[in-house]
Length: 253
Image (cartoon, rainbow, N blue to C red; front, side, top):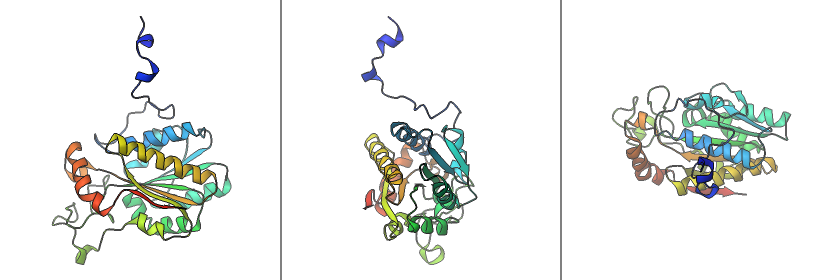
């Protein structure tokens, strides 16, 4: 009996999407990026849009996303991914155009680009990885860092009087007329992963059906930046980040 005869289709627990190549990922063990990459690849394949998908790569930990998903990619200047996505979608309206950005890229240097692209109602999807810290550059405080949270640049914890308050980008996006779908999800468990995939699929469908702009926020972990194990990072995220960044659909036009 061969291996193929032993492993029945219904027993296949994990299958790598065709769009994901064999390039070794540079992400830290326990990082949420790899899971979200897989979900994006699965959704694109299931929608039959392999040849029509265009991703916009950011600056930050996910800058090398184009190394792992075999679709067309454009590299944007720091924070400018939504503007580039707007241009691509307007030039090729039949394409699935999405950005993939961290909280530093999107909510700090890219705040204006993000808000105006969403407000214009361009038929793009912005995938926003929120781990409340700058991961690539050494664990500095981000716009999304929680009050009291210690980082390399807030060693005594984020102080509202000194640093201001965490920015809730998804809540801002809800108020913009151009947004069709705004959701906040996570990928720390199997049920959460399934919900996140469903959200990405809905956003991509909206983009292709001309319903407006979409924001999918993924509340994530950065165990290296947080100085925790992957397991402890998930627990900390559930206990501290979810109360400030509650999961679920915030807007569904």
